[in-house]
Length: 292
Image 1 (cartoon, helix red, strand yellow):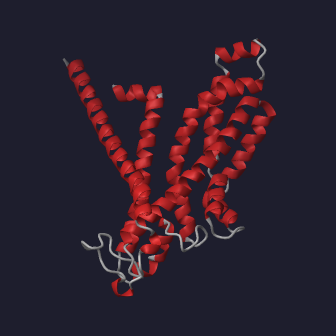
Image 2: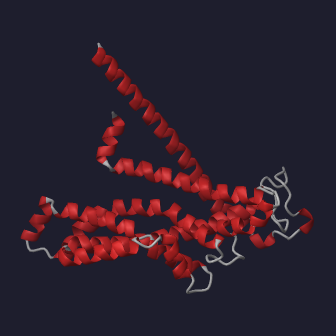
């Protein structure tokens, strides 16, 4: 009887965990879908330069006419946030893809070659990892004028390390599989094995790393823009909106800072939630634990 009660309670806990996971995934999908629709539809319909400066309406609190209030020159803050989210998301996705390509290439090379090449590449990765990402990113963007591509290069050069480690570990695991030994015995070259067997097998892990990197890249871009080293001030990125609202926050106007911050936090948490569900799905051990 006691064993039956424990088993029933265990199954009940598993059901509750699966229900909570389903709710989180549904909420994440809804937020991501709404974000994609907003950044695709709103900017083409309402261009940012069509919002006339109205100093008489500056820093108005949220109302029916302006749900998020207005900024320091009277422009609608909701439209500014949507435009800022579009810019930050485009920069984040481009930077994440750049970092993923670099990390996948480096990690696959280290794992496939092994030996001294693997050791040398890993020491290089450890050297880069010892430097804080933000500090290295500031060093990179400081060499260029503020713009989109310096930020993309900065994030790409500072965020490929984790992807390289993941891909290398996966390649090392695959190299011990019997079919790899059979391919080597059959006379296949290392390049052919890497292209035909190793690279396709690590693509799901690399794609997951890219999705997980998008929120991090958006935060990195916002931090650089907030410091005045990222995107030009005339671009309505979320970091620039928060940076421009510092004076308003000190004066007691909270909405110019709150809403751009929410536009940065909520979508990035939703993307991270979807990536977590994806990771559980492609990880057989984790998936079996959730099914208990």
